[in-house]
Length: 342
Ligand SMILES: Nc1ncnc2c1ncn2[C@@H]1O[C@H](COP(=O)(O)OP(=O)(O)O)[C@@H](O)[C@H]1O
Ligand SMILES: [Mg+2]
Image (cartoon, rainbow, N blue to C red; front, side, top):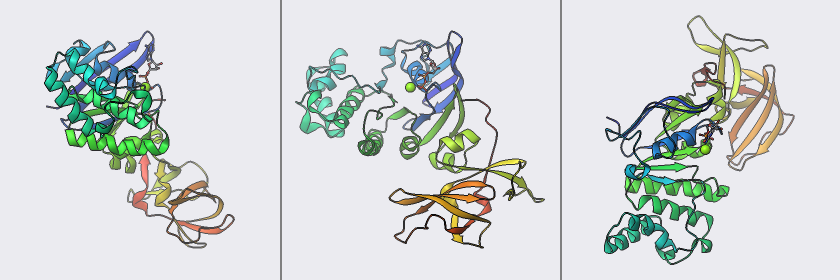
């Protein structure tokens, strides 16, 4: 049986259905992200698991035990919120020790456990500093250490990196993953950032308007988004009209007008070839330099398409250049219409 289980979990705030009949199983040691736009019910779900928000209907099971109505303290879960609210008047060491002292852990054990967890988050050199003497990333590590030190069965992270700037954010993503792997702790992270969810999770749960709409491993989610919304929310996508041939294979409709299918084709799956070659003819309208890649907007008879090519050091296509566009048919994804409006 899964370590953490949500069964038909619901939360209503008056007329608002914040979370609707959510089923989710998380295995022991797994890192799962809840991904979705603002207001889709991610925080509410996490808060119900933590015990800070009452459940309207459904059940939460932890290691087979029903904790749906258990007090937060008795669940003993590690929680890190967006605003990680450290005690400003306490040193790093005391901030981390606080939870253990509250639990009446013996002083010698407190010292030992705090030192070990500070080493884990690489803050052992800063143990005597105060929060105001730390960078954003370091404060984030203190919050993580504070949650981990109680050795919780599950770690709950709510947008833990949203206060950090882009570079630090990326670094901390890998750091969180390293720590999670080292400790082997079952982790549920909430984020609205698809890149963050894809890069560090074992599985990603996409939520829309209180409902789960897809659960998959990151690569699978990116390569096989189920719906139109997901294809645009997770990565970039060209949405194209398509038809099936007699053998049932999906093809891009080559002229304007509605086809029987909606197809998604990722920008990096399109090749730019000599004008006159490929499946479709176009002209480069604009190009953007992204460092490791060039992003092209290409005008074609079926609309403007986004194409991303790796920057391999060669000269890029100039704006105005006539090009051919090519792709392999098996990279087209057939999408279903969105079942919920987000
Ligand atoms: N305490 C509350 N009272 C009333 N409505 C709430 C409350 N908390 C959240 N909501 C509503 O529930 C929905 C989901 O919110 P939330 O879980 O915070 O979304 P997310 O974390 O995905 O941005 C939103 O429509 C939000 O306005
Ligand atoms: Mg939230």
